[in-house]
Length: 294
Image (tube, rainbow, N blue to C red; front, side, top):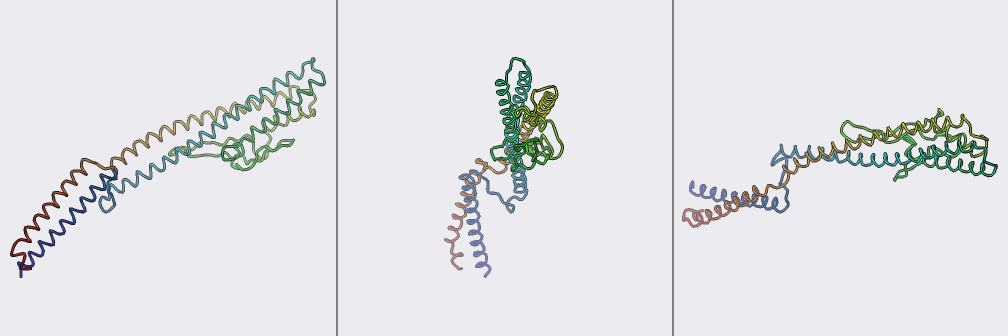
């Protein structure tokens, strides 16, 4: 009776060894073919937890990089618009000075008034610049509302609230510039009103009172361009920091998750030898007369 139980247990242990070796071989072969280690909380809870944390960090940094790219594109478009506004204001000042020359007759002054009208429309178009998604970049948070609709006196339909975006851990930047608020007059609205008055003849001849809002508007644009430049530099620094962190996290994740081919091949060979030895042992046991008693 004891002999029958011992032989049965031995046979069962042999079968268990075969299953274990086959499982080990299958795992090693899968790791070799897929290039990834077979990991789970049950197999290696510490490594699995670390991998989850790394993946979350990589996902967060990747989103920051997307935010930084979008911010950089919007700031670049803002800079282009501000450059255009600088040119409009400079031309308006030249035109105002030219207007006062005694050599101009009624016809030539009419042509100058037409150009004032063109500059007004050009300035308003720049102030109503839209990004690739059709959002107005100078409307504050009311990105679907045209901030500077036609009319005199000029109104502002935005809300005066700047847009911000997070480009790195603990770093948020302003990417939406605001010229006006919904209530108070400012340099830009005054400049547009001045251009309109000169274009329509409400203001017969430009004087010092007309040049003053032009200079004020130019100062405003210069200040905003400096802010945009600083923001673009901050985005570049944030992207560089994010890339460094992403590289470190990605390399660590690769070391934990990717297959160690030398180790996997060694494991495959070991399990194959174990399987072969187990089969051989069971074959010998089956040949014993004591085993046949079962």
